Length: 310
Image (cartoon, rainbow, N blue to C red; front, side, top):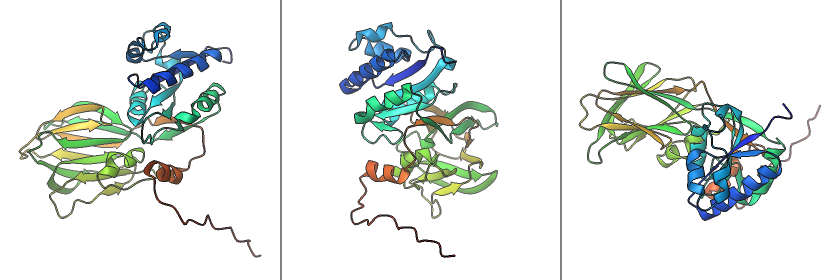
């Protein structure tokens, strides 16, 4: 409805001075346009001292329902964007990241373009891109589901004790592939391929490719190479009962669950993708070059298309 009040969630890294100043600018711009800035309760409390006017803003959940949020503007790095994706997970609001950190792979804009980004949000001048997310289940040795969650970047099974190796068996689509001792296994989405997956030696996957990467961590095995499987594949990692140590599941570095011997982690495509607001045409190659400062000196430009001869 054109006359309906617009609620925009503002998620900020509240402990950094530059982010607090950015939050103030975003809140003022939204209010000037007649929109209602909404804050997560923890952000409102954290901002209250340095930004007293934030205490008067409505809080997500207690004052404004998630279903009424149109979009989330995120001020911070990838960690803050992941937190925002978690906050809006059960709604339909897309997430627009404005990078205030270092790498900011998930962000759509840099801090210098913040005012333009907010103006385009107000004008509804953006498109929504859906990213593959993971559904994650943990089963005990009896096969009962004891924990369920999701991940945008990755689900990682890791050893819980530094001095103990984790013994696992990898299963793809109900068939065992290999077992080995290791520090852990990363199961990554294309979005997360430039995060933990990348650091672990996994492949960079373009966001337009729907796939799941499986990357062992420091495996003591002759065959424990990174794998890329289809988006509908079911990946299972079982912590073998004979293992000397225990494991822990981490999803996006934010949600965790202990894994005793015999536990089984099943990872597959979630039926609910993550929605990202985009302001610019997709140019993942440029993003890789900019974020990783890749050397491209000497490039002569793209080939000129040759005329078609009839």
